[in-house]
Amino acid sequence: MKLHQQTFQSEILNREVTLYVLLPTSYESSDKFYPVIYMHDGQNLFFPEHSYTNSTWQVKETFEDRPDLPEVIVVGISSPKNETRLDEYCVDSFEIERNNGGKGGIYLDYITNKLKPYIDKTYRTIENDSAMLGSSMGGVISLYAAMQYGHVFSRIASLSGAFFVAPKVIEKRVKNTDFTPIKKLYMDTGDQEQGVGSNDDYLLSNGAIAASLSELIDPFRFRYEIIPGGTHDEDAWAKRFGDIVRYLFRES
Image (cartoon, rainbow, N blue to C red):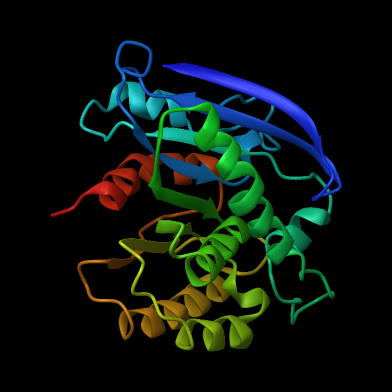
């Protein structure tokens, strides 16, 4: 598997962005086209020395160790280190602690209308088969993508979503969304989460969102898991990453 990395200045996001593009094993020896997974917090996916926590999702290692997984292109998008990350990963302003959030629409527009066309032009992609995956606030913005761009990103995974930052607004958006374009939507939260909020914050907010989604999406296309012993860190997310990828692209 080949991993490409490039850094550039984004005028739209007003910051430096590093892209990590992981190509499947067969990419260079075939003329096949591949689906794409867009992942947030790209600096935490591959290199411990790039990660904020010195741990990674072990994305490359997972694909190398799991030949049963579908061949996909993974695009990791770095996030800023300061509170701008919170702004980019939430469309609505937070209801707790401080008035962050509100720039998620700009971030999703950038991925949809700027980054994705570039990836589709540069690599052999199946343009109408894209996934989006993230954790914590990355899980929040991934669900927003399902609601706003479900016709573009039809396979969505939200791990340990920090939905408690704006629970009423998010739940209202969920209930007013047509999820017909969504092929698969996966959500989970650990029962030992300690992140931006308390464990109860994660369990209660994820449970409420999942209950609303279960009324709008049939069981074949929606799955919600509570992970026993699941904590709020890259090591925990790495353990379930492979099974989530397999679920997202499994058609039966």
